[in-house]
Length: 261
Image 1 (tube, rainbow, N blue to C red):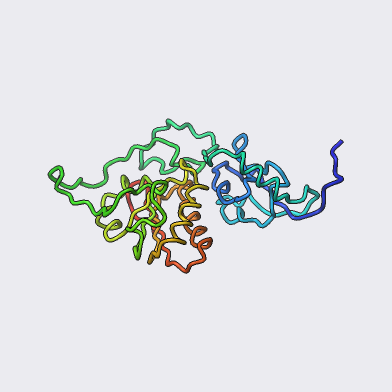
Image 2 (cartoon, rainbow, N blue to C red):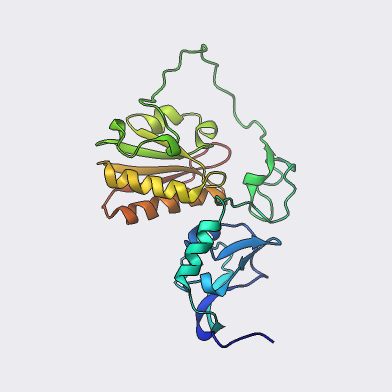
């Protein structure tokens, strides 16, 4: 018989499994690590990890997360700390069951039913004439510093001082042909991947950068796929945690290289 002696009636997260498609977007938004993808669905792995504040609610594109009132274990901050100390580096993998080797041709179907174009192999049909190739090595670089990987950049790097900072998802420079001229010009560059990198470490590093460097603005350049939205959330959380009023802008690039906003 289940022991309910230590349980109380309180508000707690509820996940509608019929609506959840396992995209994993909610996972990084839970600072307590209470949510995980299990068998292709987001699950609350322990009542005591949920603080019931509902930071994950607005992140779910399917509207599968809500707050209910029921008998549950009380929120346990010490248990959360121990859980996070044991937790491996954050990895959010699509659990929608999409074949990762699916080949797709535009004009037939633009996205998979689960909304996970980032996990599929996609082949583009040419829709316009390609530009004349430039002489190799003739295109100037707008990059003004090194390193660029967020993990490697010191919080007090000289190139961050009084700079407009561009936080770019890894794939954007490959997807958008005018990356250097349209986005990198006159910006300090930080590069990160919200899907494959350790997002918790990135959040801590970016927060330190914003606190210790006198930057003028922060712009996020990300891909228009669900997993990449984590980069925007991370940047906004870092600004909030820094305690500074830093101008912020987001630009979304489609997987065919178009600007979507």
